[in-house]
Length: 289
Ligand code: HEC
Ligand code: HEC
Image 1 (cartoon, rainbow, N blue to C red):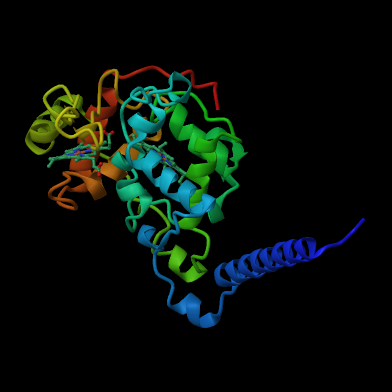
Image 2: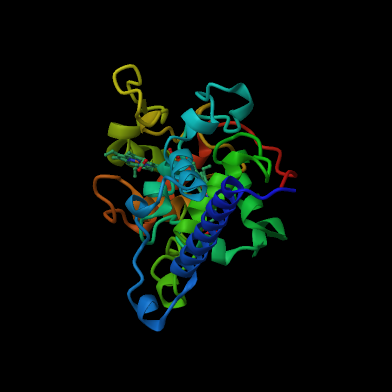
């Protein structure tokens, strides 16, 4: 084969390009994997503004955050592609995992990918993170599980990894999820719970608990609900964590009323939770995992 000047120039170009790609990729690896004691001490919750959306992994992180925030539109009843309608109701993950799970304490998801696989007492089974996310899809969102290799599940994991990956152990304490509350030993009565609900919750969640939808015509970029439902056919189903008295009471005690958090007594939280879990909502086949 005759090697002329053009071939040599082409070869040099290809080699330079390859060299550049190799150097870029090792630099990127170094940037993201080198952890010093100093950087551990300074760990801060990763900021979505720092995500490089020019990369595929950056795009997935942002997509994952959108799925948690605008669940209905991306993977629920409002999704344009019917195959992507995994969620059966119009709740957003963020309605329970505030701010995409980035808020301290609460039902936060920071560090969650490091806490799984995890043994779940209630199910007497060890779940990996995909199964755990799908647990919320089937129960809290009253839908069906996402395939592990779908772009949507991979994006959710990319996002959860982004907010979890480099969290040092001593920071896990701060983000380790919602704090337990003491048990309530008095008598639970839905009539008492209903009265307390009408005083503390009804102004936002409504008399029948079906919440308040957003005006998506005026605000097409918004979440489906301004105030999410806590009852009715568009609410979490009977298999959801929020349908368990203790979990609902814990959430309500710490997080509600939304505009006056931390104002309820343990008794009020239990009485109201007892009323909320008694309200009509979709069934769930409890033998399903
Ligand atoms: C109706 C409220 C609700 C909605 C909506 C919801 N979740 Fe959850 N989620 C919960 C509750 C309650 C728990 C149990 C928390 C616990 O066990 O401490 C939980 C637990 C989790 C966990 C495990 C957390 C841990 O630390 O073990 C993950 C991951 C999770 N949810 C992801 C999601 C995702 C992703 C979505 C949206 C696709 C979603 N959830 C929607 C209420 C909800
Ligand atoms: C000021 C309005 C307001 C009041 C009062 C209020 N909430 Fe909420 N609630 C909200 C909003 C808004 C969200 C969703 C927050 C988000 O998406 O960040 C929410 C979320 C919830 C959720 C989880 C999501 C869902 O729909 O299942 C439950 C459960 C809940 N509230 C119960 C209660 C209870 C019980 C009370 C009374 C003790 C109460 N709320 C009082 C506004 C309110």
